[in-house]
Image (cartoon, rainbow, N blue to C red):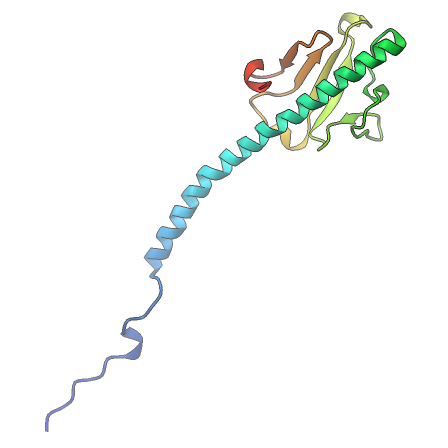
Length: 153
């Protein structure tokens, strides 16, 4: 009588699934894509938030002109400007998402001139390209870091 060949073990036959090497390749590819996409997304968000500073300054400039018409001078106190941006307990005006704080000053002490500044707060402090935004009574735009043309677009 002839001996029958041994039956193959059930766990070695056409097992479905992925090997450890295949899983490591997939994880490596995902890590590479995340390493590229996340910094790009953060830069995009910082750039998009700059429009909030610009809106704050343009609205404050319009309020300064109204204040001038009523009191014959500009104000250096943003709390006196009558618009709907949030006001903190200590009298500071903030942008809508509270990423910028409004500051106003009289250049050279002249009450017929003003310089508005949108100072970065919170997440915008990580914006290395533009810094704080400024706007004066002539509509002259400025930034504390970087190029005015690239930041005010």
